[in-house]
Image (cartoon, rainbow, N blue to C red; front, side, top):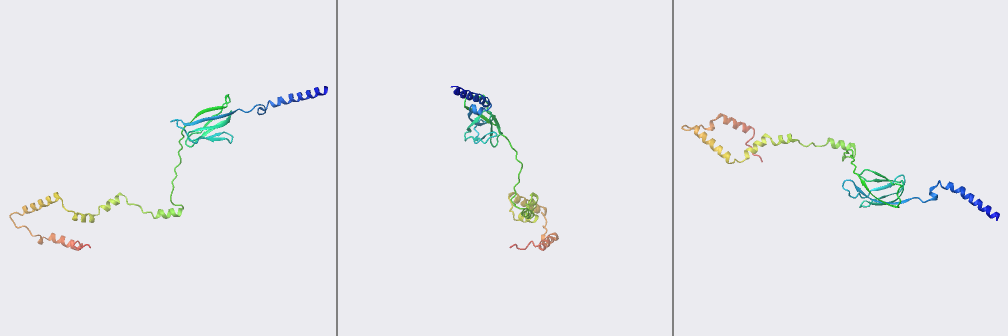
Length: 217
């Protein structure tokens, strides 16, 4: 009987020495508070779902992605920090509070758009500097407005087109009036004959030397 009491006393003493040390390790005494964290990610302006948003637990390797309708669900613990990130939106951090008494929690997370201005990038079709130099030196510069205007206003070409252009009603009327005025100028006398006009002969000789009477094949 004395031996039984001695063993019982030693066992109780050992338990008394162990329990105070175990109080400093909460994981050995009570289970950790696990929470099923669910929700939907929406845009701040239109409240439309934001699909395929990355949800990561900070400082861990756990995470998930929202579906096409912005819904997500992940297992977290109290004091965990969730990071919501998506291209074109600002990152949002959410800290899981430790005041939850239930193992399920739902939120509506709002994301705001983020405008990112990228630097200008010019892409050239030449892979090397030598090809760029060759293409640059052999580039045919197009005519500007002045060159095209001077080409369209070529004097010789305009004169040739003017001679081939038929006369309209107004031009025929002016020509008839000029002939009538010419006849009225020499009325009552013999009109001069152009064959004896030295100026007309000078114009004929000049035109003959310039080759205006040649046939253009």
